[in-house]
Image 1 (tube, rainbow, N blue to C red):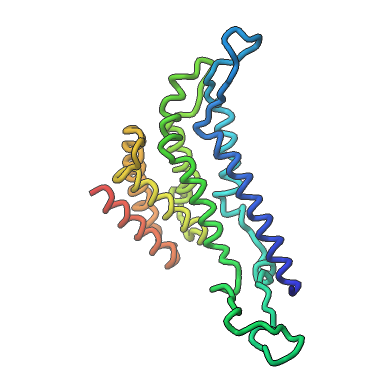
Image 2: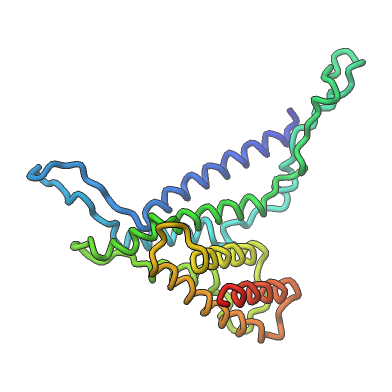
Length: 253
């Protein structure tokens, strides 16, 4: 293969490893420690011990830093421009001995010549959101405070509040001017998740989660209205905020 293919393979390998590490942090949100010890075993823990609030907040902070933050994806344009696929020149030249000798129909290049990095990052972020918003996870977040005699743990309201700050915190900044592409996409993805939980929740989604999602949409609408008052918005950001506003309005109706 050509040298650039090795760069692409190395990049994709590291990117996949990053996703695997992100999934470790996801498991702590709404998590529980389960003990298989018998009653009376020395030092045995309770059968179910919710993960402490501090540990869950640590997991959320890791996801903020390495998954959701735009600063996590400051990838060099030089690097991205070198992530091409291998283009073997022998395809189709069946009449030239030693020059590939593969039939033309075997030539099957990918649809895109570069790595679709925006989609790849977006899919990674969406997977993290979906992991935390599974009905079983939301249900554990609802129950965990009731099952945690050893100290505070994370609640549903805590999760929704944290993600609002992480995803939409820049909307409340004074004189917001532009929102980076990756953050705009994340905001649209999370808004879509909130709409789904509020209006068409999967079976098993707690009623409290549905109510909180609706409240978050209302709060998002107010924040967007405030941000749209800024005269400094660039065209892409203004269009993005207008689309967010339309999505929220439709959902709340």
